[in-house]
Amino acid sequence: MAGSPFHAAEEAKEISEVNVVPLADVSLVLLIILLTLSPMMTQDLLRIQTAAKDAAAPPEPSVETAPAPEKPPELVLVVGLSQAGISVGEKTFAGPGEFMGYMRGELARRSDRKVFLAPQPDVPHGKVVNMLEMLKDCGASSAALVQTEEAAPAPAAAPAARPAPPRRGWIGEL
Image 1 (cartoon, rainbow, N blue to C red):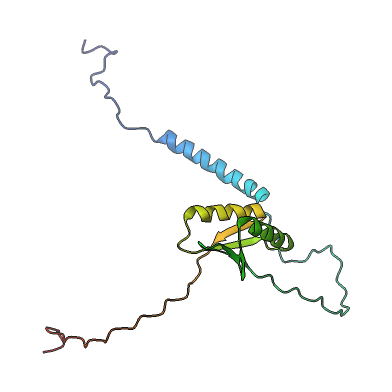
Image 2: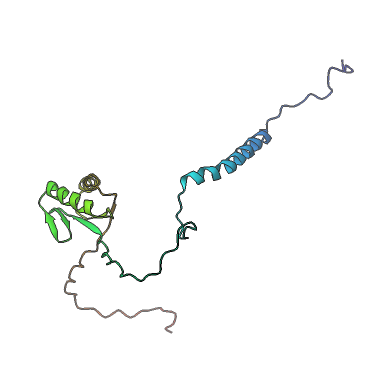
C-alpha cells in the first residue's frame, strides 16, 4: 500500500508549540476597547476647576470699596497623645469624654476639619488607633499621624578626650 493516495509517505508529526496568534489577536482587541472607553470614563469622574473667568458673567464694577477684613488663617489642630493623657495645644483633658466634647465644638466652628495626631513613642498602638477613631467620630474630615521633635536630652559630661594614636603603615607616610 505504499502507492495508495490515502496514505501519505511521511506521517504528520504532532505540533507541541502553543499557537500565539489568537492570544495576540484577543489582546489587541481588548487593548483597543480599553483605549476607546478610557476617555469616556475619565470625563465623568474628573471635575476640574479652571482659573479662567466665565465669559457670560457680567464685568465687575471698578468702584473702589474698602477691602473686607481678612480672616486670620486657622491654626492646624494638633492633638498630642501621651501616657499621661490627651492634649490640644496648651489644654490637657482629664478623660476621653471631655476631649470629645471639646473636639466636637472645635471642629464644628472650623472650615478646615483636618486633625494631626502626634503620639509619644511610648504610647501603645491600640491607644493610637482608638484616638484616630475618636477623632473621626468627633467630625474630623481626615486624621493624620505626625511625628514631633522632642527636646534633645542634655548631653552628659563628656569624658576627657584621648589623643588619637598615631597611624602606622599609612601610604602617605614613608
